[in-house]
Image (tube, rainbow over all chains, first blue to last red; front, side, top):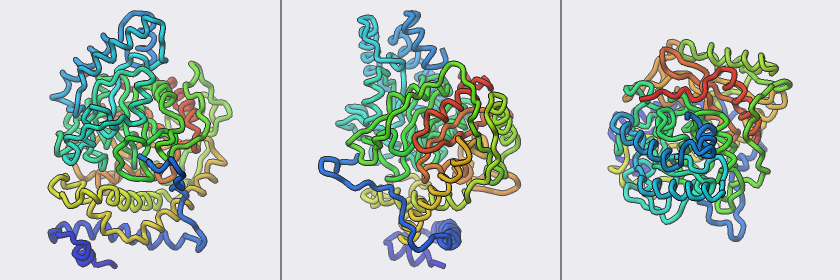
Length: 62
Length: 461
């Protein structure tokens, strides 16, 4: 499991101990969900085609 | 007059003018503001000027269509030229855009009169609309409760009759949740159907724009004005724009309504599942065929949604993250969380997204629409952070988004419509359709609305 206290420090986040604890609880549960979900991904699965390639004159999205 | 259609008819019969409708709206807003706090900015002068112009146009025979002269509002996430647009954030409290969002342009071109910018959850990142900078929005059904969010001001304004339509944005349910908690209709169109140009983004791939209204047909009228390609938004679709307004009388013969046998009805507050299933039976009474279906793993889909949103929202707000004192505690907590998420999990989430899109496409080979509750709970109290549903304690934000957030990952259109009251608070059903089949969910929604006589469930202040 990830040490979120160390990770937060590495990211430059100066968080109080109880905040780290709450973040770790949420993120650990998400991490555990992903451990299960990732097993479903076939090796050749591509990410969803959400991003549309830019073409000249259309670079200003929003 | 409760709906856009009714007001539009009255305008054309000269029973009322746009100036009078707009004055009523502005008076209602002023009266309700201390109690509901639904607006961040009211643009009275602008609205009065615009309404007078609309009246002159109608008198001269220039009719822009059903939104002509109708008072509406925009969530304060849509940029409006010369009118402050805050995104509910201290970061943008003095932001006066030099451009209009595409949505603002299109509703203006359709003749609507903008009366103000609605209050919202800070940065559209939450479901309570208890904004620490502009004050909490209150639910008009019970002012001790939240209106839902993030488009909470829009939900409260429409439910209380302060305007006929208010636009919302929806990244993980932010149109449908306030629609459900406030007893209005809320439509999240297909990703790419409505331009995101000029909308202050929360998330690059999950943000959708759509209306909150007091009837399904009103939502159709608004979508007709909004839909269509916009080259300034590179994710805007060139898919053909359909005719959205459902007929006056609708049969549902041949329509297959999917009713999930797993997940959606398993853990709801008392009374909610029963009302939604009753609505399904009303659909059957109109000729639809009810098809019991097993839906894909929605809990997994929700985890995918959370990973994408955490990463993209933090990336989106990264330029501002060194100004920590400018954020409310709940939003800062989520933005920090996004910085602690593994990059690999984000990529895997996008790969899983594709798999879920395929699974849902297969599901929709057997059904035409999927009917679910919009939320498993009614509006919680202001300040309430946890709920107990079916004996399980749950974070209030995660509960509110449980049935809606996954649909943003898929990009599918979804309509929330009221189906009744439980202990005096509104409860809603959600109709999910295939991509770009808004016309079908609006048609089914209008038929169910007619059958349940639940139009908007407005509650006067």
